[in-house]
Image: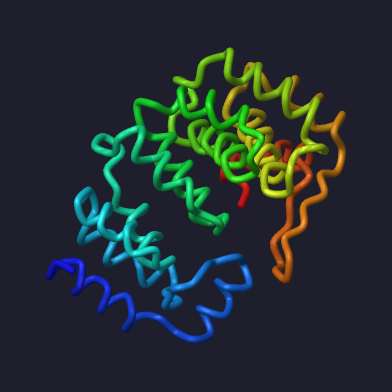
Length: 230
């Protein structure tokens, strides 16, 4: 273990707490992990932002806190397409799956990843595809191709109730983001949201909920707060 990695891992361990660790495990985090709050990761993120080498070594540890930090500091201009796939492949923790998708949404291969992941029969990759789209719309809606928005809405309307659990939640997120961030698609997104109705997602022993898409879109636009749904 190189000195930088060792120092960061030691700091992460010192920031962990049993209570936070318990909370993360309840939300699906995998061992090993220390239980570091996101607020406590921010100074480390600021200090190491863009350090792609450190991000890669942190991902190799398999520690959930270390991988979270890795995805916070990874440089979207340096990360390679194959590396993104390799990072996603072993993940089970939905938070990290979402963070890989968010990172991918800020790379030059965002469209390619959407096309690949959004057609995957695997829950993890399918969820990543729609989370990528939701994130892409937040970061850079003007550069999301119409063909992707059209395909997403078609598939969401046709399949959302039949796809695996986490993919249903991700599709709902994408639908909301389309309705909020693409004004030309507002009416169609609202039509799809009303057609699919309530989306049932099992969030386990947590307080997380999947919002009603139509109501969320309307509230967000009315309030002017275009916050991505959690």
